[in-house]
Length: 370
Image 1 (cartoon, rainbow, N blue to C red):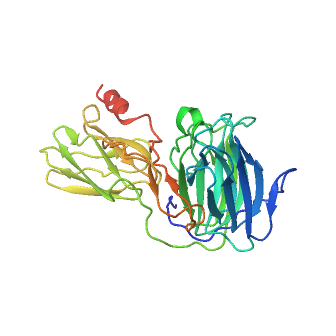
Image 2: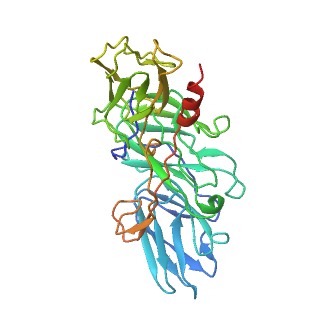
């Protein structure tokens, strides 16, 4: 089983997009332009090939922005100035002006090039975008093993991109402020293992579904990052687990140490993990599941008194056992959709969410009853 990662490698996305009527089109990369006139982008819809550089010119008498609703770029243009972005990541980009978010909106479709791209984009849409419904764009794609997908929430509700079998999970990707009126956030997953994977949104599983085909050869790599440590330790005392909840990265090592005078076990309720009997003064190790979530366990010898929760924290997910300090969004140098463009990029900080399980506090309170 493989987990999400932020690493970027080659990827091919099957996304065939024809330029709609009235749309601007660029062939074979190159350059094209867009004009900001009064309170509109002209044209509002553009279809270009991977590697195309687009230049926006503000001909209006007021400042405007060119801002990705998925949180990857944000350019402020004073009257008479220009902003240039080079698009090397195939996919659809819904963008807007954050000074006039209701009236100034546009769409760019970036077609894949002849060579596999390092990263491709999938958007989450919902009725926050006029005329839209709950869906992935695209919802069917083919990618090469070892590649990256950037999942951008351009709607007004929280969304996830989650494999049905738990092989990958972005965690909850929050929408923009005021129900998607402003820019949302994004997350990435890497795809090292070939196969066909159906996926869904954990929050809207019935209507938001898709299929991902990963081709090529499995690419080994380091364990994916996680907000939690790779090891954790729990003390068995008479008669409690201390701490009662502990976090660890997917596949991490957890050690239970018996510091009491009685025998104890750490026996999981929903997965086949069990330390068996741990004598006083001894310890036992278990390997945490690969799938993020909350896993409850108990002592088989003292089930009414000794209960605990192991939290497996995946990528893009804050550790729910730790207190988080909110950080403001920041602006950074010269990286945009291409990784090297002359633009100011909005770095949006996702608020991670904890998926899987009914919640630590609720479980522990329930577990105290006989």
